[in-house]
Length: 220
Ligand SMILES: NC(=O)c1ccc[n+]([C@@H]2O[C@H](COP(=O)([O-])OP(=O)(O)OC[C@H]3O[C@@H](n4cnc5c(N)ncnc54)[C@H](OP(=O)(O)O)[C@@H]3O)[C@@H](O)[C@H]2O)c1
Image 1 (cartoon, protein in one colour):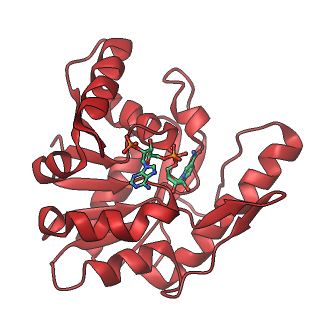
Image 2 (cartoon, protein in one colour; image 1 turned 180 degrees about the vertical axis):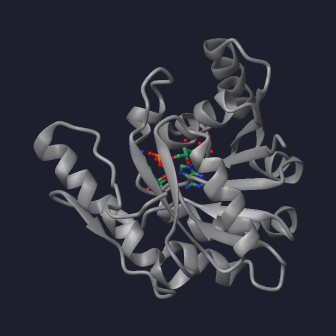
């Protein structure tokens, strides 16, 4: 069944990249922005580029309100304020955090998060709302996602407490060409997955690549 998927902060490369792939999989996609006009422009541009009518744009709040799956792709510096501002629109829904707490300071470096990880911080902010918070998509390079003809060739490691929601997001990941969704366990493992992206950014710099991760030895 097609989902309605909102990308919060979706005007950036990661949001537009995921929007591209979700649209190609047939879902209704809404690119969210702090500025509704910027969101609409990004949605219109992507719909035209893909030749599809299942992509649109909106303000972050309208995008979240309309969606059943919300993917958060803002910089970590905007993570808490963005989630706090959207609480009412996220209640009871699947909220996927793809935010990596990192900064560039002579190379990529992690930012300490009191909750343990950005995803656990999201779960704390949204507790009592009934939102099903998951971590996913942290390790997919925007550059590759933005090339619709190129298979992504990577695993998506999914964390979360709600087994049904996790299955929905593993299935969604598996609809991206060349991607396999992997159950990576509870939210407390999100820290490691967010950290892998920092490792990949460093590797990408050295090898001039857009690397991803594969978990070896799984027979599915
Ligand atoms: N780029 C990658 O390859 C990649 C890969 C994996 C994970 N990620 C993670 O995905 C997230 C997005 O990455 P990105 O490269 O797309 O980031 P980005 O371009 O820096 O930011 C994405 C969007 O966030 C919004 N934003 C910026 N500052 C904000 C603020 N102070 N408050 C609220 N919204 C703000 C902007 O949208 P508006 O101005 O339109 O509101 C911007 O277009 C990051 O957390 C990153 O760690 C990125």
